[in-house]
Amino acid sequence: MTEYTVEFVGTGDTITVSDKQTILRACIDAGIAQEYSCRVGMCLACSAEILEGEVTQPAAHALTDEEKTSYALTCMARPQSDLKLDRGSYPPSIEADATAADAAADD
Image (cartoon, rainbow, N blue to C red):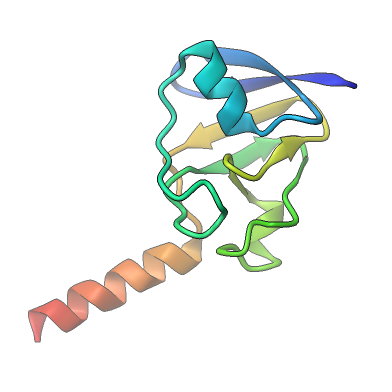
């Protein structure tokens, strides 16, 4: 088992996460508030932009293949290196969905 440092930029929160543990589980265990909902890689509530490092997240179904290189779903993502993450940053696919929903609501 290998352990990595995960730093959440802008918050001062840093945790140690094993490569066998999800980032969300480590946050919960450390008492760090991390937003989440479904815990199965579908809702995007727990997303974070990957500023540095790599994760593995084969079950992150809500992300496109392209988004999986830039965003982590912390409920699914396991570190493969030390990481710097920006919590609350959402991938373009969810931003596009929100814009479309707002436009539909205005009609």
